Image (cartoon, rainbow, N blue to C red):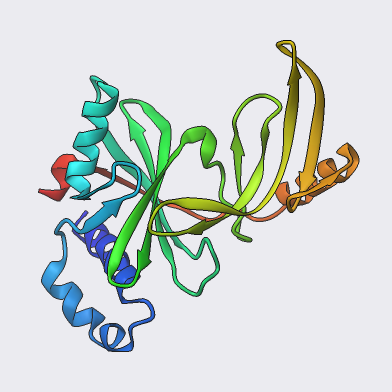
Length: 211
């Protein structure tokens, strides 16, 4: 478990060091001083600065769940292909390992976090695309871009239902944000599904793990 902590928190501070040559050269020395300690970040969801322990406790307060929240998988991957990696946590609660995902992205010397529901962040692919679903007919996959205020869809391939008198009267299809036929959409989705998944490392970290 100690080794897992060391690896995990090295990742967190490598995020801050990206793009800073001086920090990169000294990152090993810096990490030796902060191993196994919480790291501070700004939550774009809750609009405040916090640490991981506080974040997991806040989830309990927000959703009033009798079970505690925990991290059960993590990966380091360049989601927006800007040359810097993001740290990605998959979150669970109780016996449910499909609560959601939080992504940590560094801008300057600050780490920002971005929250996704389980349906908002599916199986991440090695091309940076991630599936999402809003409803049965409103679904697709997208690439993400991050700012200090939140995330946006960099590229999206999705279907979108058109409602009329409380009924679906049509479904529109888009590939890379351009409207296409259903066949073209299905072909794009088939190619997406064949792309390799990003490998996540299993771990169990709850709020007590960071104290």
